[in-house]
Image (tube, rainbow, N blue to C red; front, top):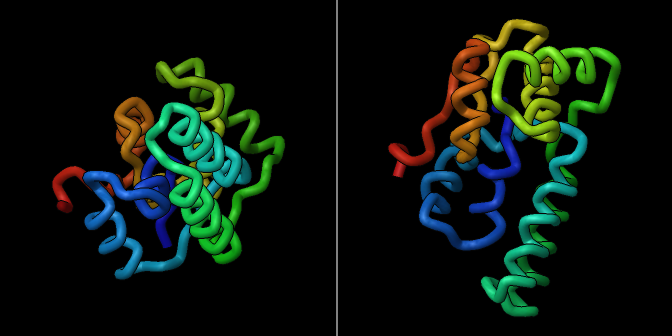
Length: 145
């Protein structure tokens, strides 16, 4: 099981340069672990693409359908005091935004505070840098193509 950042899930929903690599990783290990707001983050990205003209109505509908199917099968780390406390610590240590710190904190708690025990899949460079410094094993989608 791997922890998936929203940025890494988006190529599963809409065609992007890393779609093939992302699908290959998912095919090898279809167990997806995410934080509780991942579906909201993915929906936000899809809505932004639609508003900016990157997706037409049909493509947006298909992408939301894929999101709902994926969300029905993934495992979520719920919001908790431990996630919140860890996110606050991460904000003081790394140049992260609140959502990224919360997401990384959820991964940290999912790894039972042993980040080297959990692989993290992300396309977000800032999140990847913080995760690497925290000791997570990163799946590099850029070189997996």
